[in-house]
Image (cartoon, rainbow, N blue to C red; front, top):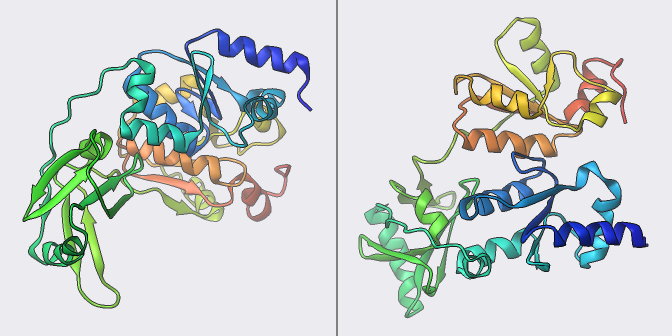
Length: 306
């Protein structure tokens, strides 16, 4: 049951700024992939807005769900009104509604250069002929995961033609798609293949035992703990650095080839943070499978489990 004190505190926060995002983590250090996605969108549109780290206040973390009657985090408020969670924010951004709501100017996007091979064009033209008026919708999300579907062009879409195939996409996809090659591999195990030169290095999983072996061998690496300070006070890996603002600045100044190994409690938050650093251009990025809990089980049983 939401107490009046917590309700008043949430309402005061919402009233304190035109744009307020309740999220996991901070603007510069999101602690989940959905929060990071919304932050990325807002950062591209606004110079400043307020964020509230729900991980730092359990009452607010649960209270905002009851306050908004919305079960998930992040949650966006604009001028005192609840907008929605990650999926709604992404949808509003892609169809242009979020620009109008925030009073932000839409970016001017250059149509990307995309290559559709002859084999891919032939594979696409059949389904297109069965749906008059449809185009191939290209989708590349903030994590550079690609997808394609058949869809009608929307007013805010960028449209191009490549090898006789009409392609439509939102502005974010267009900005991430320059140089993309769409190919098709025939056969039962084949399908469309999208080769994007802009995609960041992929995050690689690494077992706690292999992390320990690298540390014991004296390999140059950064072991990054993305948990909260409260969690780190319960137990920590001696070689790890807690990701605070100062350490993040130090990481950003390092060579992009520096191996970065991220860990959290079980591996979810660290995967999201590792993907963020891969997007920032780091080439050797790992996520420690199972987090510090797996480390305590398989490497060092003196580390407390919680």
